[in-house]
Length: 328
Image 1: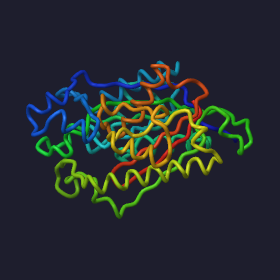
Image 2: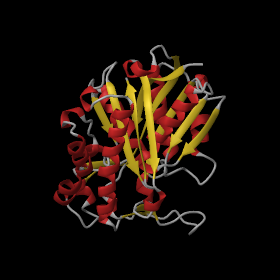
Image 3: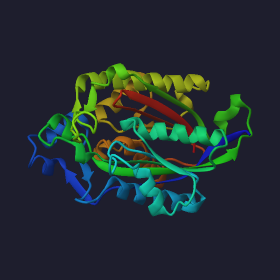
């Protein structure tokens, strides 16, 4: 067996309700100028009452399947990256599996917060490379607005809701390893975590600890410092592993945390802004959904084209971080 993963297509979904900074300032002690100057965010989408993470995931999944020209019954694995599941159990992925009409295989959730989509992609890639799965749906979906303290302007202004998905399928590898980056598909993935920093970005609740959902808490300055350093290091690691330089990249599709992190990371790794897909001003930080949302936007508006070399990178609570290098 000598399989590799080909990304067949993508899709995304945003809730209908759009909340601008001006609207947010009506019930939070903040202003458009304060938010934009610190984060670059101008608006975010918020799920409607009764609209669940699974609802967003299903919509994004259907669009990804349609774009890929693949039927749900062809799937043999579904991975849903989320921090905001419909319920503590069962896995929200199983609900999505049922609604899509996926009748075989397995479905499960992955929890790595903002790194979740990259983690899910890496897991899917390894299932495919080992011959355990042929066609995999990877979704990042969040209703992060449900775990925000709307009195804490240091966190509540940063996040939004949404979902994005990709379909991956096994294909035979043809190139020798040193030329693998020339083939379409997933070239390499790189995952990291450091549990010693789990208190920098967390939720102050949970079934075992407080029997409540809790709210997002963050030590902003420390998160920023770790984000810039960790993301720059994992980009360097990815390029070094594949014997490439940053000049070889057509696009970086980063986790859309905030504009300051995006700009600082770009400067640190020497990547020009015109090679970075940036959607944070319109979507805010949608956690595990942010990369597939940005990816889908860039594919649909024609920026990302067949054959482009794309690097995706993210960091989230845990702290977790990782990257994926993909030839589109």
